[in-house]
Length: 309
Image (tube, rainbow, N blue to C red; front, side):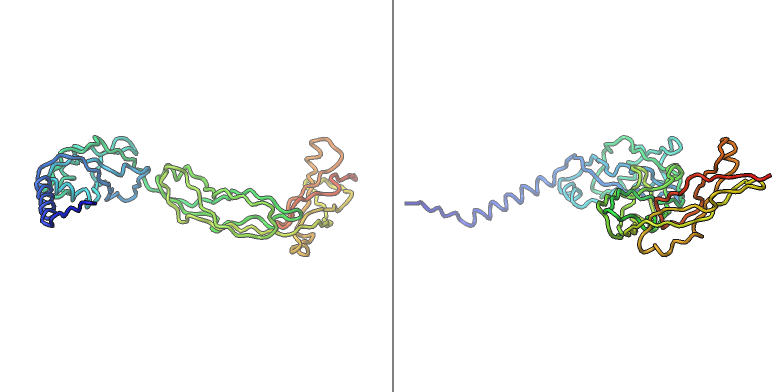
C-alpha cells in the first residue's frame, strides 16, 4: 500500500518567500565582476577610413550591487569611442590608451555602476586616407563546350568596371577585381550568370557593386573561307606579288555566317621584315578581323614577289 504525503500549500508559500528574500539580500550586496561590452567607433574624420577592423569588444571590471550588475549584463549598450580623440603613432597606426578612456567610458555606464578598470591596456587602430577610383572587372571562367560549339563573341561583364573606395594605399595598389570562379562544362547554349566580386582580404575596400552579370553567347560553329587582297607595307617601287589574294579559313557561328565579308579582314606583308631576314618571300599577317570569327589561318602562308627595275 502506497503512502500519500500531503504537503501544505503554506510550505510552498514560505519556500517562495524565503528564496525571494535570499535573492533580495544577495542582489543588494556589492560585487566586483567583469563584463564584456561591444564597441562602436564614432566621429571618424572626413577623408579618413578604417583600414582594418579594430577590436569590437572591451572587458570592463565593474563594481556595484548584484542587481545593477545583473541588469547591466542583460541590457547594456555599446561603448562609443570618439575617433577624433585617438592618438597617432605612425602614418596609419593609431591607438587609445585605456587609462585615458576611463572617464569617458564611466559616463556611458549607469551612475550606480563604478568602472574600476578597462582590462585591455591599449586599443590599436589603423586609419588611412580615403581615396577612390574606377577599376575593371575580370571574369574567372573555366568553360568546356559541347563538340561543334564555341563562343560566338567575347564574354561580356555588366558592369565592366566598378568604383572602389578605401585607404589610398590599397586603392592605388588595386588594378582590377576578379569575379568568383565559375566552371561550366559541356556548354551548348548561351547563358547569363550573376557572379560575386572578390575583394582582397583585410583591406576594407568598398565598391559601388558587389556582383556582376556575365553574358556568355554560345553558337554552333561551322568552317568558312574567304578571299582577301594582300597589302604590302614598306613596298619598293616595281614590286609585284604572287598571289595578290590569299584565302582565309575561319570558324564562325551559324547565326553570323552570312555576316562575314572580305572588307572585315585586312592582310598585310612587311617588305622590310623580309629584307632584314634576307628571305625571298613575304609573310602575310592578319591585321584586322571581325570578333565573330575564330581559329583563323591563311593559305598560302608565304607570298612570292618580284621587283622590276
